[in-house]
Image: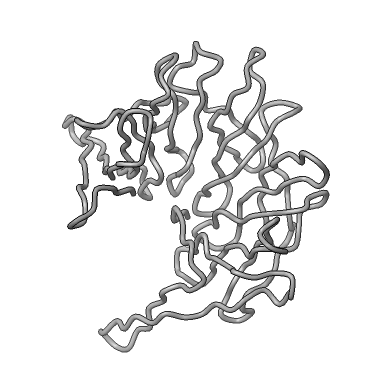
Length: 287
């Protein structure tokens, strides 16, 4: 499961009393370590019972991931072997598996993606080259699939490609411009069964504007954009992968951005991307 961000120390939880739902804000506490502060939540399991996030370690130089449950409170996950800093980005819907990235120890430490389970602890996820940097951003329902990106040298050009990991094995999802070795992409969302992936990619050589993509059965499709915007970037998808949300950008930037919702056409109907508009008085939105 993936919520794009929850950059807060508190999480709103629902307390049910009969048919009435009363909302309560609850302090999740802190990691029991005097060197950490400012914890923030990043994702939540499907039933809301498990929360993952990170705490700042020693004056914002590094981070420490945590896992929160009602029974155990906020528990530090420690570090992946050889790392100085780790961040949890996502948790599977069933709450069993956590994905994120760590910075290796030493000067110029590389970023490496990981999956974590209570049984196995940290497992480093491979990249697309012997020398590469990875980040995992979202997971399927049971944690068998994770998605993110791998930064590597492609025909002597440094580039980033969207990737999907299946039980630890990496798959290059490519870009919307496969003939350009400098084109970049990144995966940000995944369907419940792990078969549909969404994210962003460069689509024209020399054009810095990106397009939201939807990947299925080995094919990466350009979701386009809407009138008045030059860029789009998908951030999440529905459980079945047929609804995608994300952000719209104007020429080369997202400062005056918009939010979109894309729906796959059914029974021969065309796909549809809609601008979700703005809140009253706002000129920026994102989804």
